[in-house]
Length: 419
Image (cartoon, rainbow, N blue to C red):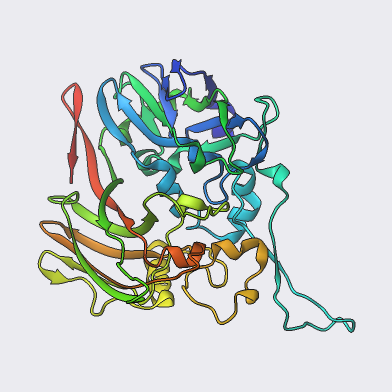
């Protein structure tokens, strides 16, 4: 298309400022850009080689990302790496296997090979799930050879995904500000000690065709509306199961104030362990959302139950999640606490079973009061393996919601508001 050959000029922007904690890019004023900003060369190197975290890859390096107009916050994601641990699974398996594996250096796209007997008939043995070789998502001890990511910032900044163009005539001093995750275990495995980060590069496309610029500015002058990602959280204490009382029913009501007076669209609840597992889970570690035994969840919005019944079964939760958020890629047993025989879960992804408990609902209301009823049966285990430990452990229960916002041109400036 001529639009992509004659109307666009691509810019490679180096950081205006960078250190081990922060990177900032600044964008020239009085220009029109397409909104598909790309962040390239995102990577880290350490004292030894290993693979990036399976569910976030090199994206785990970005703790938070924001877009500003001078000092005016426009949009962003304050918990980018944790949010991406959910969103990376919220796509087709083929997207993970054939695209994101290379772009983001994660390893949760799968190919399943059935087993055949000597007569080439399918057996009832456990199918093999093929993970990719480490070389495709490996960090090294050398900045020049470590694998790096290329990230479409529309995935991290919803404002960019909501509009085709962004004008630095409207926003005169555009800045992209990235906070670097200081806990290296959130993206490096193998007990690696971080040595440093690769210098990131921002790639953006400027529109140079005057006809296109005129039409785009006419659209932007009508304003921009989008769903920003905002966060609230609650704390679930340890379950209290003991040798004497190995099963302890636990009920908690979370009062969430972070969405008050805002129109809340979709909401997802994610369980995260407070300090990771005692026995290290090297595949996904602190990003896992562990399934809880006999878990029941109900949402109460503005004084009324949102759901006709509590969500209390793993596949019931998964069905509602996919109804609300779309395709979600999980392995067999990844969203359940118990299986009859652990040997039916292949060894090279056994750590992932029971690690994906996400509860997603469509709220679609302006919030004055939001409560979540949470119940589980905490279980005591003397062995305290990865999967058993989290059934009695304290949890950080995180909530990510879409809230409606607008930017409306006003005089020589603009106004940002919750819609």
